[in-house]
Amino acid sequence: MTKAIIIEDESIAAIRLQNLIQEVNNQIMIVKVLTSINESIQYLSTESPDLIFLDINLSDGYSFEIFKILEINTPIIFTTAYSEYAIKAFEQNSIDYLLKPVAKDSLSRSINKFFELNKNKLPEYKNLFIHNEKEYKKRFLAKINNSLKTIEIDEIAYFYTEEKLTFIQLWNGKKIPIDFSLKKLEQELDPSNYFRINRKYIIHLKCIEEMYYTSKSRIKVSLTPITTENNIFVAIEKLGKFKKWLSL
Image (cartoon, rainbow, N blue to C red):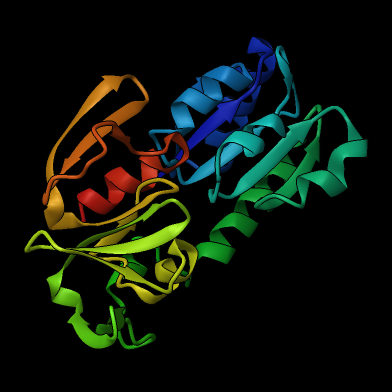
């Protein structure tokens, strides 16, 4: 079953679209109808539906504002009364751009396109286990004073930045500077073991000592070995992927 959401501030339009979707394909389940930018940001910061039906002009602004706050990788079918935003819409993960009132045959083609594009595509989280396509980093070479040291990946609890420098935090408590940016490390590390939780930390799954909600969309984590920073939070835009990573 494909889980989808509708983002639409006109209740009649939302109900009509939901009924049309069920008529076209009963394998799509609408799990949520959202009516505003703020409500959508809160929902999508913690949930990752398979498909989004998105109106452009919402009660609190244009829905493109959502993409300025969150990184959305979910396919989108735009449903709108405005034709002039088509080019901007296709800059996102757009499957199609349907003008209101949405015609049943047009909706059917869009949904078929969605399933065709995803038919042979593994879900993103399954790709985390495909190791034969990429060789991930097994060790690092670090300079300590005038000597060189090889550090095996199994020795590393997490990576973090401090005063524009990147450090390796070892399980034994030692920290060592390395000449890598976190952005580069994201490409080099095995994503089934390491996850970038915010702009300062890439952590190993097993270094999480404790985690808990401080609000509906804020998760605080405590790491081991203990850090000098007391307040480490998962970035709001990464919450959905973070929870998926934890449950693999």
